[in-house]
Structures are given as structure tokens and as C-alpha cells.
Length: 187
Image 1 (cartoon, rainbow, N blue to C red):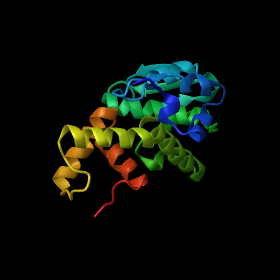
Image 2 (image 1 turned 180 degrees about the vertical axis):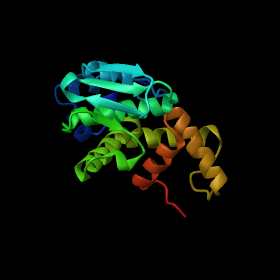
Image 3 (image 1 turned 135 degrees about the vertical axis):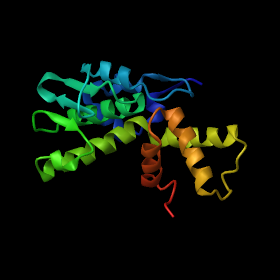
Image 4 (image 1 turned 90 degrees about the vertical axis):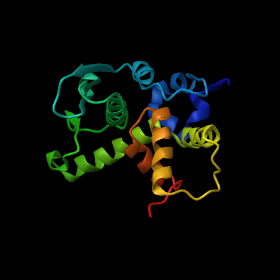
């Protein structure tokens, strides 16, 4: 399969990468791999510092640096890297931006808006709609399941878990992304 990230992402999303758009669009995709967040960050000339921390991660726009908590699972680190990259590429101001699940740490409503925007960016980066459909088809094919069938919550969680493994993200991230794309409804 000779595909590139241009085949994986919508052009509107690739535009977020500005000067780096063409280099990222030309990255090869083999039909099996998850998104190579480390290579994307490298192309964007951003330094990653892995450290022991209390929060999941942070970024320092003036220094083009992303800090990520190396104590967290790899799938969480990947999402944090994508999230912080979103802050940098989307031009979020505020000096030292950080990723935490404790919303009381955000100093203002605009900080919370920035966090939601960075989460959307990270979800689109790591779980583009094309890959969600592609890997969902593969999961159903590999497990000899029908897309037309009705599945209970155990089956649904199993499918979500398999997708998460293929995309190298958490099951919770996959579930939210499926819902946001209208590919799954919550009952």
C-alpha cells in the first residue's frame, strides 16, 4: 500500500501545519501503523523533554518545547504530545500551557477553550476519520464480525479496545472520537 499522510488527513487539517504541511503530507503510511507523532513533532522543529512531572505535559511556545510526563503510559504520552503540539500550532497564548484533568487549575475560561481546541486537534491528529474507518473495517474483518450486526456493551468495548491498540491511544479517547464522528452512539 503506497499511501501518505495526505491520504489520511483532510487538507483543511493539514493546513494547521502551515510551513510544515507539505513535509507532513508526504510522510509514508504503510496501511498498518498508527500516526508517527514523534516524526511530525520532529518535522515541526519542536523539542520534546521527557521528565517526571505532576501534570501530563506542558508546552512553552516561545521555546518551541513540549514537556511530557514519562511516568504515564505510552498512549497517554502520545495524546499529550499531540495535545501540546495543538497548542503550539494553533497559536495559543498564555506562556506555559499544561495538560491536566483538573479543570480547576485553568486560570480562565479562555484557557479552558484552548484545552478543548487542543484536545480536538490531538484527536484529529492521532485518530483521523480515515484511520478510524480503515481500522474499524480491519477489526471487523479480522474478527469475522458483521458491520450490520447489533452488539452489546461487551462487544462494543472489545471493538474499542482493538481500535485503541491499533491507533496507540486509550480506549476512552477512541470512544469519544467515535461518538464525535457519529460512528457510535451512547445508549
